[in-house]
Structures are given as C-alpha cells and as structure tokens.
Image (cartoon, rainbow, N blue to C red):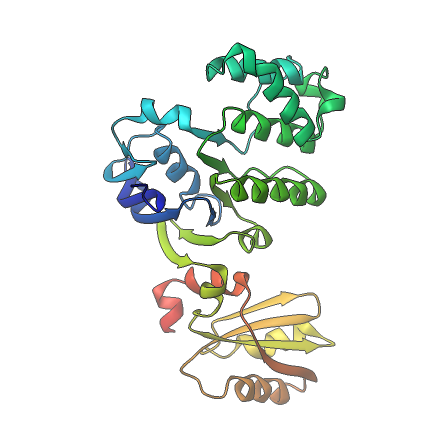
Length: 313
C-alpha cells in the first residue's frame, strides 16, 4: 500500500554548534502536490531540504522520504529524487546537450533511451535553439530551464527545489511555475522553498518557517482564514501621515505600506477595528477610506512571525 505522503518528518532538527538552524520540525507532504516552504533567508528552508535528500544528517528526529528512512538509506533514495539549488550548479564550459548527457550518465539512464529523453526535454523546456550553446553563456531564465531539465531527466518521484527562481525575471518565473504544475499533474511530488509571496500562493500546501521553527502549516486559503487578526485597509492621499497616526496605538500590531494603501493588523479580540483606526486618523486630521478586507499571505506571514512579545503587546 502506497503512503498518501511522500515525506513525513517528526522532530527533525539540525544544530550547528549553538545555532539551531531547524528545531523539532514536523512535516507531512502529500504525494503529487506542490508543497511550499516560505520564510526569510536563514529560516531553515535550505537546511531542511538538504536533510530530506540525505545531504545533511539530522541532529535529532527522523523522516520518511518515499518510504526510505532518513537518516539511514539515503543512497537508495537519491535515484528517486531530483534536487535543484538556487545557484546554477551545472557545467558552464559544457553545452546544454553535454550537461544533459552527463546527468543521464550519472543516473544510469539506458543508452538507448538517452537521445530520445534529451530531445524530449529540449523541446519541453524551450532549449532546442540552445542545444549547442555553452551553459555559462546562457541567460538566467535559460539556465533555470536547463537546471530543471537536468533535475527531472531521470523521472524522479520527488523534486526538491531550493529557491529556484531567486535570480530570474518575472516572465521566467511564471513559465517555470507552469512547468511545475505540469509535473505535479503527472504525479511528481514537489517541495519548493521561496521567499516570494505570489509563489507561495500557487502551492497546494504551505509551511512557514521562522528562525528554524515551523510557525504555520496549511493550504494558502486555510492560513489566510486563521491569522487571528483583523485586516484593515486604509487608502489615504498622505499614507505617511496616516501611518504616523496609527503607529502610536500599542494595540495595532503592524502597519505596512503598499503604494497609497496601508495594511493594518489588529488582534481579533478588538470588536471595532475600523472604528479604532478611524478614530486615530480623525484625531490627526487624516482623510482616508477605511475598510475591513481579507488577509493576504503577506499578512499571514507578518502575523505568524511576530514574537510572543509583539503579539501580546
């Protein structure tokens, strides 16, 4: 019987001396879905991915990845996973085809199948025109597509992507995600780390990490519905003056400016959040439109990564 989860982790931790990079992480990643890791740099995303693919040994805890125990039989796991780092790590002095041929040899793809598979990937990832080009001379988007082609060449069951779109333009990011959805529809499980909110919204399920600790886990919709905060949107001609008027209230947990709009987070125990905001604006002579709105993932992120002191203030 096939487990419904491609990855199950319990109490997974990694310490580097006194630094607790990941602390007591529990995870369940459904098969055939895109599972996102959202968090700032240094939150433990890369460390977690390296533990799950067997590159790092956990300090504590265990994981089961595609039915394989971690730590334990990582060698048996490697042919069944694809791994793509945020830095282009293939060979710049080799052509696109040579890079793919090299990866095919590493994964012992049968020689009779290599040419067909490589031609398939060149077409699928729009690299036909670059097949003889040195990888080091390609654009960021082209390198990204080549790296993805190499990561999936051997038909992995699980694809681990560590901030794969951090150095490419918005169009390349959109195209990359279209490719990820096609892979997931074909049954590949994908775990992707990111610090882009719009990318996190595309994931079927999402975990938010903060300083090595998982602070939220669920679908984007579930997380947006459970912030514990009222979200008040303020549209003002002078957003700077509006922010100054609101910063003085200790009950307002966060004020974030987005162009001419402010996103104001107020704990749910306050029954009149719009009235509270309007009162401060009126006292400072600020004219603005004030209304309740739904939470964005950025609001969720701000809420769950507050320190206990900030939430209780």
